[in-house]
Amino acid sequence: MAVEPTQPIPTRRAAEPATAAREQTRRRIIEAATGLLEQGGRDSITTRAVADAAGLQPPALYRLFGDKEGLLDAVAEHGFTRFLAAKQQIEPSPTTRSRNCASAGTPWSSSD
Image 1 (cartoon, rainbow, N blue to C red):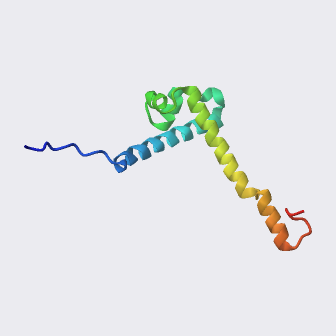
Image 2 (image 1 turned 180 degrees about the horizontal axis):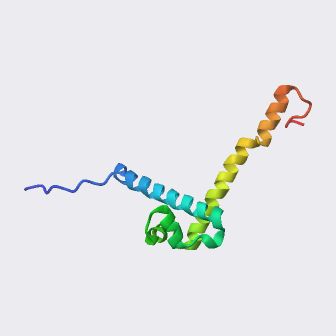
């Protein structure tokens, strides 16, 4: 009885380059939309303008974000994430402040 050759099962590694490329395209679109938003406000963000700025065809935006509102949601999330990251670098957390005060010998600490 002859054994039929089987097709190799795709591994996770085969999907990683496609996922990375998709994520890179997604970031490029978000950055293009953010630039347009900064330059001309919300009305300057059209799917065609964003696609042109990102060097893509408009269907790519729909494939990745669903619609213009999905794109705007992603832009808002990206902006909020950047804001939080910058804020954390500038302003230490209350726990960090408490530890710094306690180690400096100040009377106020989190155990009060």
